[in-house]
Length: 87
Image 1 (tube, rainbow, N blue to C red):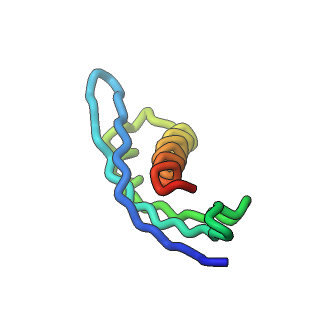
Image 2: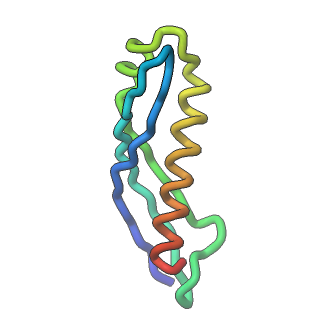
């Protein structure tokens, strides 16, 4: 079994009140590979972005709504990355 660690910058587009903002998200994720296949449930990830600045810029934005949107974008990008890697 081989453990891999990848780092990636993911960009999330947020549109609120007619304003489009690109939020850069630093993502670090690790996963196990065995016999050329991704080991189920081995994916762990950490995300980092300036949440306080986004919430300050959009005071009506719900924190949980932002977290869900960021998580969806990050997971989609990671799945695309793993698919392109053949996993």
